[in-house]
Image (cartoon, rainbow, N blue to C red; front, side, top):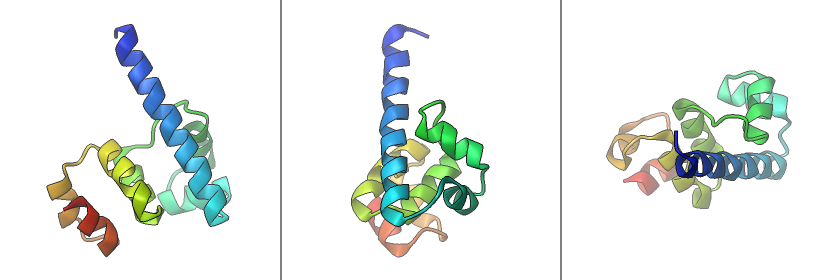
Length: 101
């Protein structure tokens, strides 16, 4: 993997990390609470917040669902799904589905 690609991945990981910490703090959630919502371990949330790794696609959709609307685009893009597909997913809150359409 070339250096530019590594830097781009690292930048996305740090951007996700900052957003997760902010979301969790503004929502009054602990790492354990967020882990339960995303159905992952608290260690996974810690890894996300430390930019060790990125959340998976389904985790990104969950984060989009619980995030303020202005943050949804980031999570939808990071999930890797096309906006048309996101709009069809019934488990997303209506505001996320409308935003993705």
